[in-house]
Image 1 (cartoon, one colour):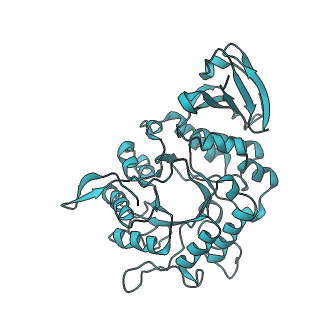
Image 2 (image 1 turned 60 degrees about the horizontal axis):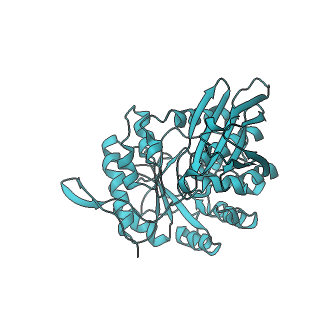
Image 3 (image 1 turned 45 degrees about the vertical axis):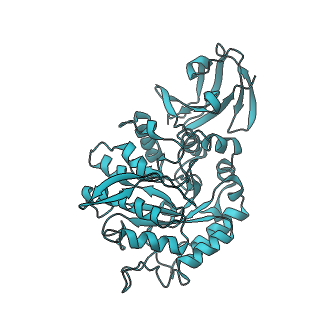
Length: 408
């Protein structure tokens, strides 16, 4: 039985019991999401392998199992926009597109569950989704119950075609109604992203009381410029959202584009390393059927994912920016006795950088020293003490990711 924390909030003249403590997202959720790679491609006649359809999600669920992603902790298979009919049925219920999802979402959820995975779905707090499909405004209770009856395990609620007042009441109401279903449903909100766009400073503590994860900023695009822009936003930490992150509530810098077209392998190492240090959701948005081995191996790097999934859920930060060199760190383990650290070369001038920092500058102060691992190469690096220097070469738009563990 799920036990929910409660907060009293007045909405529309009546008092509702709201709040979220569903026992989910105790570590950053991992899975696959269709949006960045497949967008709103609904032309299944011309492009049957890549359109938003039952077949696409079945194949991705299969790939998550057969290609090992499930083994490494990726568990959500998430439908994004453009999955429904353009109008509700006569009872006001959402209906999956009858041609593209002929057996319906309940059948798809059952299939995904049979694979040992979980199904996510997309909605919108406004009158329409970003793609113009029915939103949940005035239907929060009905849609929450529908998703639960279908066996959905995660709901991403976007904010297109909604006013700020709609969001202020709608996101908490959907949180309440998801709780009321009795089904554990991870709740992903886009609420603060729209506030930031409108130059409103979000109340992240309030948002965290209603949402398991939340988007803070722009959509990621398939480009290095987009990834770097998002990293800068997170490094600046405007509104102090990093301090709110903890088990059950995480900031979401958006999807992983590892394995797509826009990033070099080095740039993919940066996104994976920084998303792990940020304790960010690890949602792949790439074609798992046609993934290069180097990208697949990066997505399945066991120690990198251990950094991502640290049970204390501390969001890391950028501690140094020196020209094209950046240093990011994340405290891990009991009493922060372990630290993950990334050296980035964000320069595009084609020149490798020799990085040299004294270990104590990274917050590593145990005199007995630390066992250090080169995470991306999965090799032991050495034992270093606070007075020692770590010296590494970092190639242009690439990362060097380390893990320092004090167990002496």
